[in-house]
Image (spheres, rainbow, N blue to C red):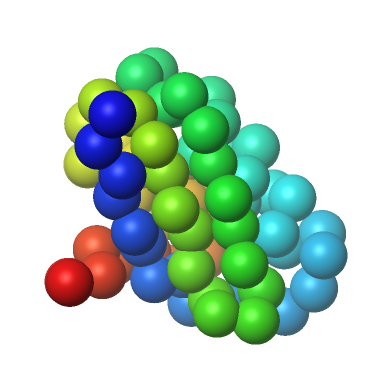
Length: 69
């Protein structure tokens, strides 16, 4: 299953991490989500639409961008 790594800007605490995790997990096609406050990133497994992932994060008040390998 493909993994997408997103850089998340604006997270400052555990509540932020939980909000981003929940938003991404609710996107259709997502099978697993790991969010790191320290690395300011989210790793999303599944076949979710990239635009929906970015929109879900932005709807929570954070900025997201695809991290290039």
